[in-house]
Length: 143
Image (cartoon, rainbow, N blue to C red; front, side, top):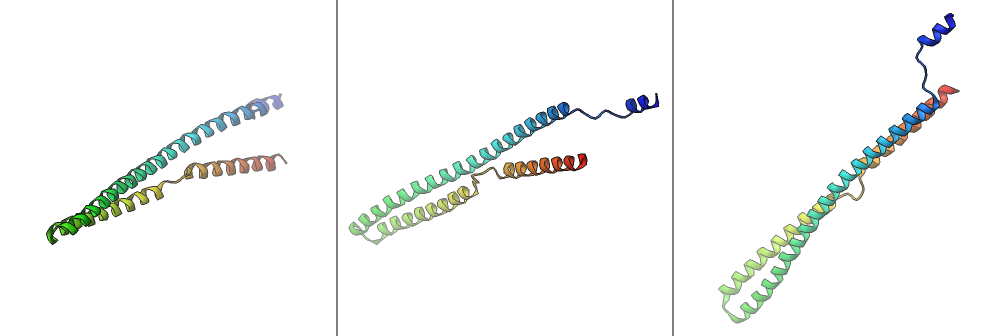
């Protein structure tokens, strides 16, 4: 009789089927969470890449205006006296400086865009390591 009461007072260990069900549920939840994190990271990457591409496009447009202004300056310089071509040259220099600043800002944005979801990759590596450690721990306890 004492043997039966000992059995009922100790909590029953889950069966292999229950453990497999829990593992499946936890794995599914983990995969969903990691996929969501990857989606968030990829959106941030696309945002930086888009912003960088936009800034580079703006820089290219400013450089085109600079080229047009430089050509106009050369024509005016040949045709007119110093003050007019000097004014056109100053505008040209300012446009090229603005293009240079825009290009540097665009390059910086593109460099910040990471092609891989780094946090997700690290989390998955950590999760795999923890599962392997837990499995190893369970195997050593059973031995």
